[in-house]
Amino acid sequence: MDLISKEEATTFVENVLGLTDIQTRLNQDKLSFLNDIIYEYHCKVPFHNLDLLALPVSERRIPNLAELKDRGLSGRGGLCYQNNTFLYFVLRVLGYDITLAKGQVEIPVDHVLLVAHDVVTSGDSYLIDAGGGYPTLIAIPLDFQDESPVYTFSFCTFKYVRKEDREFHRMHSGLEKDSYKVESVLKNSWQHNYSLNTAPCILKDFESSMARPYTNPASVFLNSFRAVRFPKGKLLAIKNNSILEDKDDAVFATEVKDSEALKNALSVLFPMLSSPKELMSSALEMFETFKCYN
Image (tube, rainbow, N blue to C red; front, side, top):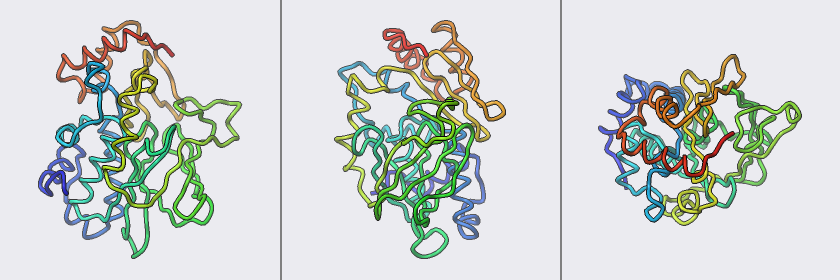
């Protein structure tokens, strides 16, 4: 099943991501164009939990297919289930051989990832993760033996480690989970971020486990506020009551004093989330009820 048409995917890539000459680029260099899509997706499609916080507790659930499509085409974004799943459908109708893959951050199958196949040569495979709160600004080739090269995008230095035939671990240098600040005591150590298995799966495989981030009262996405994107490849985020910005490869935090200032900051830094205003207000009202401060 294709969630969107090729025409809709083309319009999204042109109007939201700002990329042109799509068919020419697909014909000339599929990997280069894939990397441009991934980069612009990080820049312009935010990772956030605003829509989730805006829902009454009794209505919380994973997005349905209509929501996946609408939020995707508009560039509104969401959590990994929204962002990586929508990108999967975009890439598929553009002609990439793409499969879904299961990741684990906290519990099995709580992170959606993508694998592109036969991009440059027959049999090659590339990992795609454009839907989380950390930058992975290119497709990662999975042809390494034990460990991938070390990558640094914005504040984040990471590598992938092969464990078994199809299992890999993502490791961060100096970063605790759910953190954007490199800790000096951890600077020379590698911290586990998530694991994944590249075996192809289908969207239905995620329905049960992905319900937890959307419905479990203990979910970090129901106990904090966050919006993240990477304009020009650099971190720009709002996490609880702080604006986080990558300046010269260091993350600086600016405290937001009250809910009105938070609303204004969100409107300026994440304009794609500023409408409808009622939804933003509902989400920020929910945030006020649990007063998460960094």
